[in-house]
Length: 303
Image 1: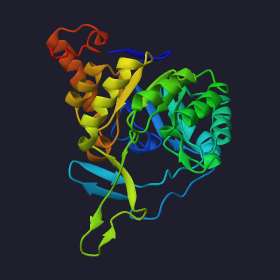
Image 2: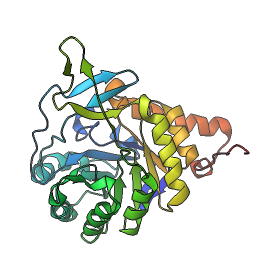
Image 3: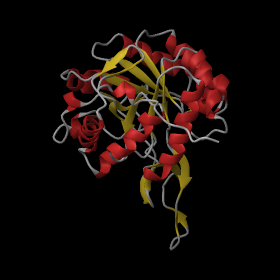
Image 4: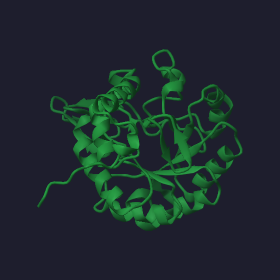
């Protein structure tokens, strides 16, 4: 069941997705954290963020819209109050970091680099670059390159970059971050959407738009993972609508080295445990001794 993502060795390919698992403590009564492949903490900014006005979550057919606004405690409080709990487990801790300028990303990574108990970073580049007129880092190859290059210079830990699906060409972004020094790529982040209350004729979200996640986006995520693994030779971690072990297997078969479980955690707090068990049983039932023999085993149809 063990896999490697960059230089990081994981006991299995199941990782918690940032923003859906809090800082770990919230799920400790339901999940054996030592059993996870890795845990990705809630996104951390330089300073605390209050997030967007409510309502911030809306259910949709086959999914969920969220407009949390990256609410978090900030890097200082994370190091002092949240990280000690995570350090008590054998599971690698990957910290998702976000910023509004390249310097903010660099500063956060630099502060965390000095701290024990962190195995790597996941860069959330689906944020507006306020130093470049508000253009989203992740939709422009040049902006994406600059922020990854800057963080790469501050750390020797695993550097994974989380890509936005709200682009025309996901491969060009993936190539750009790889050239800038990324060790791995995670995709996809949420897809921008909205919902309307027909009685009030108002948006259901306080921020009008939000990020769509859940089963509705899985086909898009699978397609993008396949495109990226076909063109970029660094590990890819698949995200998007993974609700059970069967969903997880689809991502592994198309070439993802590991997967992240997000929205499913809200529906079933033990989703990650069930997925780990399900993958293991599948491997045993199919006589597959090493999960590496499953990863990237997609059989393409003859044209």
